[in-house]
Image (cartoon, rainbow, N blue to C red; front, top):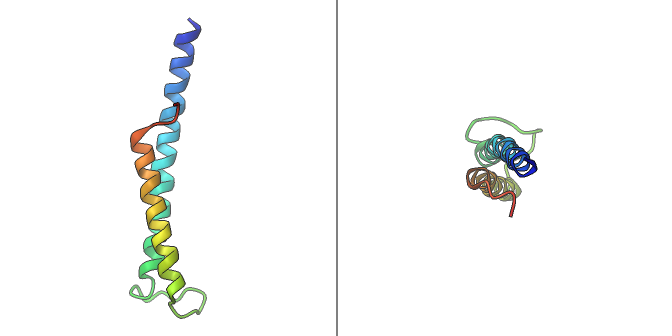
Length: 79
C-alpha cells in the first residue's frame, strides 16, 4: 500500500514539474526571441542601441528554453 502511494505521488510530482518546465521553457524562449529580434520589431529597450550582448543573451535564453522544454518532455526527474 505504501509503495502504491509513493508511485502515485511521484507520478503527480512528475506531471506538475513537466507542466512547469513546459511553461517556463516557453517563457524563456520568448525572452530569447525578444532579445534577438527587438530591433527588427522596432521596440526600443530602455533607449539602448542593439549590441552584441543582446545577441549573446538571446542565444543563451533560447538554448536554456529549449533545454527546459526537452526536460519537461523526457520527465527524467527521479533517477
